[in-house]
Length: 604
Image (cartoon, rainbow, N blue to C red):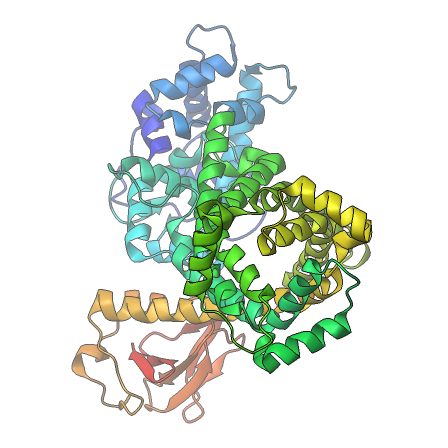
């Protein structure tokens, strides 16, 4: 039972009683302007019945018959409906209804909100119900979520349908859809509805979820961490020579220039000398990313609860900035010893060509300087996190707005524009906090410094303020290649991992064996010949791939692209094999197919 749906039924209004749906659904009209007439038709209500229903709901909240609603009454009404506190939207509901912003909602304002909300819900219901049958089928809901970039498995989909589907007949009528979302005050987009559904489902699980709220299951957090980790490792390796050069220049207390530093690195270790310390730099990517990811999501929820907001997206820019800064500090503290050892390794002088092992280097630091030495320079490192994040965010938003006005002409920024804005804003933020990075590196590399103040005083005395910007040029040179490699490789890996997830689902959940490339599509194994709608939905995901399709008429095999935007016909008999639907190819019923993934294929 859904929370919102449960709330409406709990009032026990006669007009809200569940109808006999043996005749199933009232067909909705095809796409076009939505009016209340459409809503009445979909609900099978008269104007009088609808007026009575809305009046009854208003009266339920207006328990003292004062003729208006305020925050206290809405809060009390939601509590009476047995909606858990963390899922109430009393403040947002009041703001949504209160047209004149006087803190009170009279019946006309309430009715206007209900009119707008029911038409909004009908509009998205109509968009999901692509067959215009008056009912949302599970596969239609799945398609809508997939097209919105939301991935979920069949168990999640079944659970969501179950929460909305009050009579448990496997389909969602507009009445059930309305009952579930009528008191949801945010814009009813498919993404928002999914988030709401997800939050509601967490209430009824009956056990503590292991994934903090905000890290949605559909996001497949592990998949993003793997992709981000591999992409980060690749970008760090590609820019390792610039990183080593930057560190060498940062610790130079005399006049330092790039040419002599490059010669010194080459003399000590040749080409491999430019990659010294990169192993540790790569090794810390995974734990740092994982800690930061989970800490950020957990902190966003904590800030949301402290501010009394139900949706973590409502914590605002300042809330996200604080959560991001604290998450960065937690991650930085956790992996800091690795960072210090990396700096010592990069700055270790070894003219003989002998590079100390990580074990020996770590042991020497521990014995000679004590365990606290592994956290030398942590304070300036942490001090730079919030300013960097603030400058980066402000610059990014400003650049994105400027690009929208002067380059995109009010169009939304695409991935490449966002990448460009992010690269520039990141470089600006890094430049502003660079002096703190120099202080940190010098404290890490030289135990003779007594602290931040000592580094600052000696640097100014010997080198002037310019000393705080040594190594800035190679550091900025890293930005573009690092950002580009990370972005492009991450996108590629996410696509590959998504395909792997699909194939794994097919094999594990449906008992389908691996099949070699020479499997005969004309005479496939008996257990694979049977058509399976569930299988086909999983395979036809938004992740582009190629399918070998067998024509059901002449058995000719044709390779098609899963996102083909044209009608594809069999070259032999001209029978239609697929048609473009919702940005991807929809196979003709009865066609067999297989999905290629490296040396494996899956038949359908």
